[in-house]
Image (cartoon, rainbow, N blue to C red; front, side, top):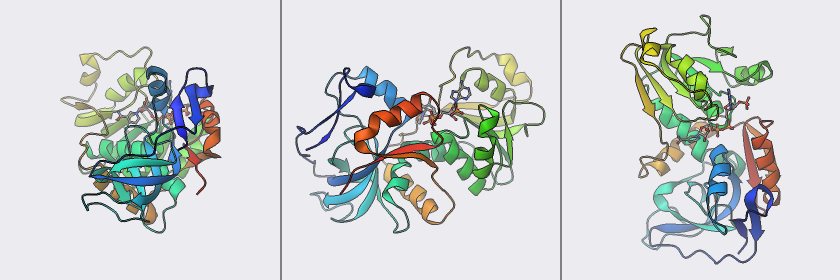
Length: 309
Ligand SMILES: NC(=O)c1ccc[n+]([C@@H]2O[C@H](COP(=O)([O-])OP(=O)(O)OC[C@H]3O[C@@H](n4cnc5c(N)ncnc54)[C@H](OP(=O)(O)O)[C@@H]3O)[C@@H](O)[C@H]2O)c1
């Protein structure tokens, strides 16, 4: 079977090999023929850290070709989206049934593959703030993989959304996602104080965001690409965020409800309330090119790779 393994000598630390074993599923696992997968920011680090021959791949969409032996989960020929820990960048992959959701007819493989990690992180981060109807929500890194979903989900939940982007050339893209206000730095005109902050940038942006939280508000901190220079002081909370809460969000937890939450995300896409912004779609043999676009920050939205049927 064909699939990617880590190889420090390969571009992006990857090599496509024809010599993988066929999946050997556990009783609660279905086998999925992969049709599309997405790459994520953190997978670059994961690939660099893992030993040679490790098999990456977390965001996957495809078709069930073998149902779980214990009789649970979707039947053969069901189109599904899956959230995996690894092994997903291959022709076929075993998937625990609680980590997948069937796709509505209106949702394509490429759209679905863009959702698992990025969409799950945005959905679960938004829940940190409870009801956001009419309340002010700030999304940092708003045009990134997670940020684009966070803006749209906050808007769909009825929040007044401020999007913080890295540079003026990103402003229009953030507006198109539905943000009420788009800023390149946090000032008095940013819409603060915020009931909820969704922060995927960290570093100095995190400290600025803390100073903009409403009293008793929440900040879900899930990412750190801007980590240099991070410094948080108790005094930052004195600005206005008295007794505010910071949650270090680890989005795959809880694991048992990953399938249920994937089901929510794909239904929102089918209903037209969530539109995955895919900036790059390539055949899976060009996965290294997609990582290059992610690394040099030229990518807008998600990069998706497709595997021919
Ligand atoms: N905790 C979890 O469970 C979890 C889950 C998913 C992701 N993450 C983490 O969340 C972060 C975002 O992930 P992603 O997939 O959305 O990545 P991404 O697609 O690369 O997006 C990153 C976003 O952050 C912005 N950004 C990067 N460096 C910046 C800086 N120094 N100052 C201001 N903005 C900056 C980028 O803006 P430009 O594109 O305009 O440069 C982009 O909007 C990553 O650190 C990732 O590892 C964590």
